[in-house]
Length: 286
Length: 286
Image (cartoon, rainbow over all chains, first blue to last red; front, side, top):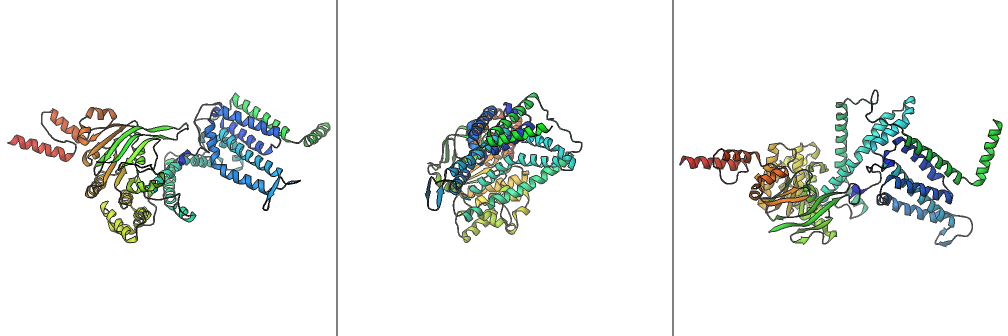
């Protein structure tokens, strides 16, 4: 069933990750994502795996749910891995070759790193954000983090509101797609057989009703919001004000420290000594 | 003779996630051939889920569904054949309309059956007559019609497939009393004429009393009671316990009986009670 898709879904709970301030989680996931692309030594990989595993444990979300979240991208992942293995050339002799392809050690390593990064990216960001943060809290956090941009006239509130609405209606839309699909199946429609063109054509009876009702719903929502005197963020107060707590500061500190450690692990020692040299010169001048 | 039999069927939504919900729990019941059976129960009692099992849109988590004595999931690849034999009209079916004209929308089902143009034309015209719409509407866009008209077009779309069993989930929901009478009256006439088995989901006791032969009462994912209309209505206290009211007119008749006016026979519809009162007056006059 489509509604079984877990990627991007919120799982209510009361774990420590659920209770963190959304802004903390947003900042941490930013660090996490940057980190995924920085790491390049075995030690850093081990550290990252440990961090991710402890995040999963802290979120108290079952491993099954997390694996299910990765499932949709497995095919894409395998495909890119194969491409990477086949098309990366390296120094020295290829491990083996066939047809026009030559497989090098570098290709395999690169494909593995790429797959690892993508999986960590998805697992980390979903555990830190989507699985443990309600969409409302997420956009609230985003609005608050981006609020400095209001100074240069960026309509941050509008963006956040649009995002809230979009996120809010994803489950509704999924449910509706399923209902309409079932209705058309009851009328003998077949979405899984036939040529690609035939299958694409079979989508029309789903897409048309879906569009019609989406437009209708958007209009109704707009009217309902106006009836409640919604007029943007000017003078608008919040029911649940975001508040940093001690645990947020703690998590952010730990996150920053881990991030620094990761940089140290990832940067090659030569670069590190160059960095040290630069620092020394800098401090010497001061 | 029973047309559809359900044996020990359970159905669980989103199994294995925190959203897991048991919508049906060991349900067994049967639907007699050529009869009108009403599936009644409160919101969330599992009626709609049960309906989606009847034509194989959902597969039971446990238990079996038999059509003419054959397990419908015996050959899962042939499930589309079952959907052709059991026509299902979902709740608010007007949202499934998609085609440019009413004609082609009704023709969608028959076309999926692979019928030739002449047969399709015949069936479309027959179906639209049965739901009480004018043939002039056939060339209009379904999106121009009123809500009630759209509903009828959607029902006609299923009737045009000439299923052996017709299942309607709340066909009269949200319609005014006149619209209700027209749709339900037309449908019952059609199924009686053709000897079709009709399963009507409703939460209106009035509908059940006026149109149905048999009743299946659902409560909390289980079958609470089943039998003929008379049998079920002879347990008013139990019906009360499920939160289902006896029809207003029956309450009135019971009031009259308590006041010493002896009414006899079935007392579930206005016509029943009128006849009973006339009989009572006639009896007294002699």
